[in-house]
Image (cartoon, rainbow, N blue to C red; front, side, top):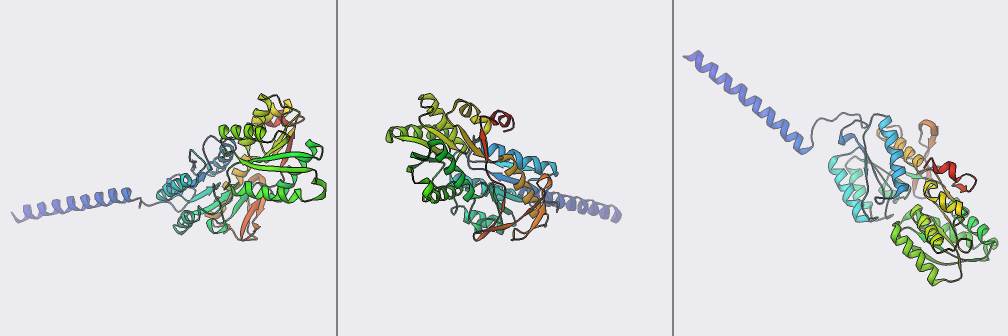
Length: 354
């Protein structure tokens, strides 16, 4: 009788231990506290690398995210690609908070505002998430390093020189930018304005700066408004892939080719028709896929402990060779090369690439 009672108690005890273990396992899963591999490049969300672009439907951003995903997955990791529907700070903040809840390894962001994202990005870094910016910078307190697609001063110089060449050195022109808060656009515009102070550009007159919000319909409307407001307008610089395609479409549709010239930063695949028909005799860009590639190599180097984002850090980045972290005002950056000129002689070839 005693043996039977003892066996019964043992069965109950074993059942209870199994039940507690199962409950503990379920609770850990619900709370996101499961055992996660130390490899930050693993396949779980907690080891994933996220890229947050400005807004959906932006071909430049999509190519950049493609390049990011390519490198992350080639190294056995998981890439999460997110963008708000509209290019707003609020939309990006919401996405970042969701990524923090997923406990991703890193966040790469093309910021919709230089300063407004700082509180949420600082919280992400305090949580142990590696944060960098690419294309459109956030302030140095908001990230560990910035991926700069080209030297900002050189972009300003090249765009003004190109506009001057198209207009024969004189005439009115406007700038059609993305959003008024876009850090990269604003910096390029500052350098464009600085170029206009040089004697060789005295014949150029910047009449206004318009903002198309990096949305096609808004950029079309802004271009049409510029043509109505400034009847002597001879050129438009659009340092945004969405804006330059929209402006070129308006010039083509209104039969103004040869009267109003468009240049700026554009995707070859979207601009080939407008370069070939003369609406935009030439334009410039870097390879957004490469910007995404370099961003991916950078977060991998950060999570692997190869770099900290400090000046003088260097790491191997595949076909890009050894990349070095350099100064960027109060922060640091990794810089790609000068913008490349696309014209009728090479646009068709590059249009097949991106």
